[in-house]
Image (cartoon, rainbow over the protein chains, first blue to last red):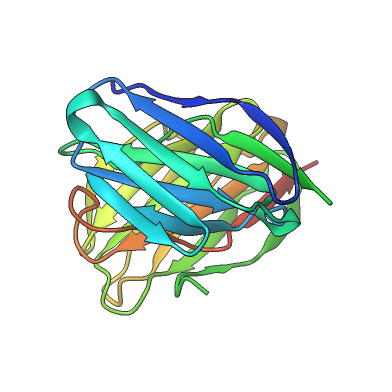
Length: 108
Length: 114
């Protein structure tokens, strides 16, 4: 099946710093989503982005489907950004397949 | 609030027991998915239902089963529970199939088997 690899596995930042999270996938996909799992375990939708670039406040994402990767940018990070960021992809006939996530810790 | 409702939020039960987890999808969504999140296995897809019919199966154990009812809510039944079944169980829903639509997740049911 399709492999989804996220990097880095862990990231420690000071408040105000910027970061880039990467998601590589091993085959073509129909759908790609980014999620934030907060410390209470909730999975929050960040982006639905099978291709192209989207921005939402301090967060933006870019997916280059032809090169099989997606990037999530977090600017001016805040302590509330802490948690685990997941990339998940779908190929035809399957459900969302998740990467192992990037654990982000932002300290004040 | 994603619009996907899962009950109960927490469940503690003994080994060998059977439990039922419930999921109400977002209004209008026809697809329901179940996922298991454990520390060692990450987020694993279990099973998908679309408009009442089983659509796809992932790594779901034979001791687990699910169904989607005519009102589109879904239930995940876990039987002969083992300590290793302790995990966070998520339900997700989407309007059609996630190949082309965005999926939204409920808050999860945290199952502890003692």
